[in-house]
Image (cartoon, rainbow, N blue to C red; front, side):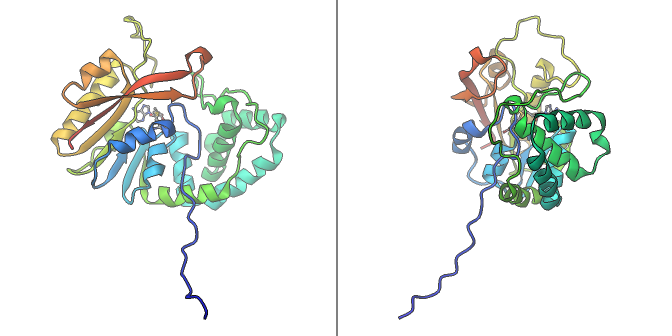
Length: 284
Ligand SMILES: C[S@@+](CC[C@H](N)C(=O)[O-])C[C@H]1O[C@@H](n2cnc3c(N)ncnc32)[C@H](O)[C@@H]1O
């Protein structure tokens, strides 16, 4: 007797971050997932960075945002035309060596704003995957200045992973915006996860000279006010930050759980290790 034919869905590749990002949340994911609301409307993540949480949730309806124009453009490109990005990345994979890395870094700094979106996205991924520590860092004038990393076989072009990421990104509204603007249209029942640049653990009391674009004490205060307004509006809010006196005072009244997180990327090797973070929730 012939066994009945079973319709099997092709094995779906799960989307994961396409770039390494400082403050990436992959390690904290279990703690975040355990504290999510059971149900919600639209998912908002306005400090998207490496998007670890977003890819894990793969929400049907989402708004993601960041102030980094190259990062936002990267996600928009992958959403729109992953094959164009894959084609350009395959070229980088073939050419990859020290000479190609530094020549590409130089070209990026001179003219990337004039390139096609796919070219920019592919070069961003290439430099991110091959640079030292996967640390995307720009200097004060916006130039990317990280040296080549020591990898034997960096995963420069992984087409299936990019196509999986594309499917999830294509369902999202991807905004190049400050977080406060990006969340403007959040409605009651929507869930917003905020993962801002963290309040520094070792800040001295005189830490007040912030350069343009920095996220300092005033910005932490404004974010806390925004979070409370959203909760008053009926939204469900989750935030992560360092466990510091400032953060504890700003979110007094909301639920705060201390969690341990091992940081993979820290410019000071001595500071690598376990750090206390807070996961803050409200509105549910
Ligand atoms: C801690 S990272 C987010 C990490 C991310 N959750 C992950 O898993 O990789 C913070 C991000 O916030 C972005 N950012 C900084 N200031 C911002 C602002 N005012 N509005 C929106 N995004 C901002 C930075 O460009 C950075 O990508």
